[in-house]
Length: 379
Image (tube, rainbow, N blue to C red; front, side, top):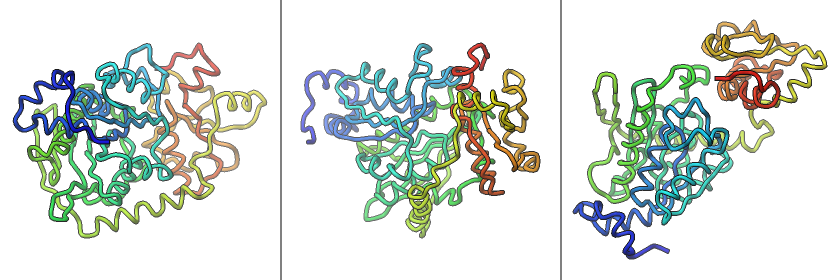
């Protein structure tokens, strides 16, 4: 049931909003009745969640399958050191509830996948894309297009970021451009940049995430000029901004349907992603003397800091030119820090060469240090 009034404590909390003629009591009520899903509670998700909570968005969904990691606290400012290893979605909801206990927080600790994306997204008015996962980003786009929902996009790389509002209602039956209108084709997994490889300035997601939160508030309240037909690009090193005009493709809906078709087919098939092996299972099999090829796909400095004994280093960017070094006649266990880069490598090798003897070390070398070799110092 929609709220029709603000209670006295809300009037006090949101007084500065109420003083703005553009928002006022009517706009604050719209925020109170809004339902927003934030996909990803990492670098971008932290400022988005903090500001939407402070602004009084009534129901906020948080979906993130990962746990708090020490190496991410340089930019994920919602968490504390003693929460390392705990689910990000639950930790985020705990902090946000203390900031504004009058709101409702829905936590989803599972990954957003083709099997659940439609049912989850359908419950919200707006989706905020705060993920660094291209598969999830395209999935968000395709589901939002088919459901007729807007989503606020944000992306970061080193010192640069992007913000846009996709699939927004422009009135008179028209909708704004989609993510596929700008980037119709999914990039190759092996070519996708990763914060663990390239690095990112800690304050960058704070800047981009704040822009995303602002766009959400504008969409809900109907004020200002949202980035519904523009892509905003920000460079913190150069202190520069550029806004590019965007346009919806005539085949935007068809691109979304085509994007969902193979995803839905795969979710109903027996192929549920890369084969996994736990750290303890790997340790047990190595202890029996099994001839397993260990493939480390991190960068040289990471490898030099710590690695599994006998592992062969082939950084992810060098995999395409070194495919022949990877054996096909025995089990190959691929690992990185947490298992994300290694999963991409396995998918790439399966697509390119049809290799089926690959196993992803679940949780990466971080899990190995926790479960098998606690004396190992992992960055």
